Image (cartoon, rainbow over all chains, first blue to last red; front, side, top):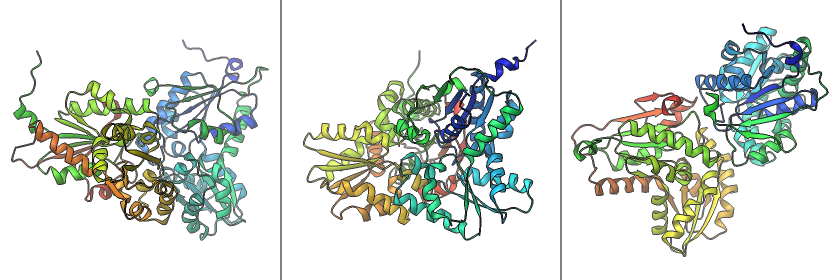
Length: 278
Length: 278
């Protein structure tokens, strides 16, 4: 007979977070701010990044591996800090999940609906996220009058990864991607990719001043706090929280990009072989 | 006792070609032109592309898997149609190779030395290729007086993959990458990435007219022909050659990018699971 872990033990376990690469660190950043007593285990699949240009099948397969890996580490809750995975793989993840799981779509959609007055909402994300239409599905199920305008911005991730975050090239790319979206009269824009908050200033400059920009990292961390509180899973120990980061590769610019995403150097990073997640 | 295959059978086997993704199709294109009687089996690791921003260790591991996969298909010769793999993984590949293997570095370096008058040679490639310094090593070992100037151009691959091949954004990125290189007085520039021939026109516009641009795809196909002839491995059957393409994923824009790289639609494409290559 398998005994469920007593709640007391469970609540002091870490939160698991995963992403295709490093973008999910923007969510970790918000979790640390909003839940300073929680320990976190992060997995970034830097050997196979990016997911956003790949097929839903492949993304689902990778997502299942990462979910299993985090569960094997004994996490109490899993945050899918990747819009692409949240868009195409949540059903598959929930099939195998033994702990509560939260994606980034619902929190972002909720915040957008609270912010929008005219119910015309824009979404930008990877090709896979936009093709999946999950934001559209969630937004219109919450409010049938919502009109959704979406645009894939596949070059934003490589531009961020390369550190071109205040470059005129990135500004030009942003104008090309966002100007058609502006013509649709949206009053709210969801940053539907965890990398995009890094170039929020450039996006801010490109869209009309009246447009509210929704950063799903902030909303997701808020929702994690609410869910942990509801389920009485908030960490109540006095111990200093621990942060552990796993990656499947150390890419060339790893340290630099991680520091930028997290706002501080990344400590306690371990590289693990993908074979161990299969 | 394992008998070697009789040469007669071996020469009618296909040539194996692999790349991190679709870039290697520029080499396939040249092989088909220069060796119209040869059958080809191609593997593009589209589930894990790109390799150029990843660590040498990870690239080596992937390269070994793809080499084993091609050998299991009974190829007579392997072309590593990827500069990143050719830069960091050739030793590892040769350890396990049971057929002759050719990378793209030596053919490109040879052609550059034939073209250069002032022995100042430029190389552009991915971050991994440039960091590895393999072109530099090969060029200076062939001619100690050669001075090599290199520049990583990591955004070129995503720009090509997204089809921005005549965009002013790509022109601006090319100027940022190439202008410092032009100041070094090079007379020859090696396109050290199999994606780059696709934006040769933009690169041509950005560099001085006097600079010779070396496309290693053409040179590599020429070298394959020479080696097969030397080893008496040229296909001498009258049968129509067969082309088979394997990919580890069908990315969103697969058909479009493949058609552009090959100059015609890709037929006979099969997707195979990466687990089958492990």
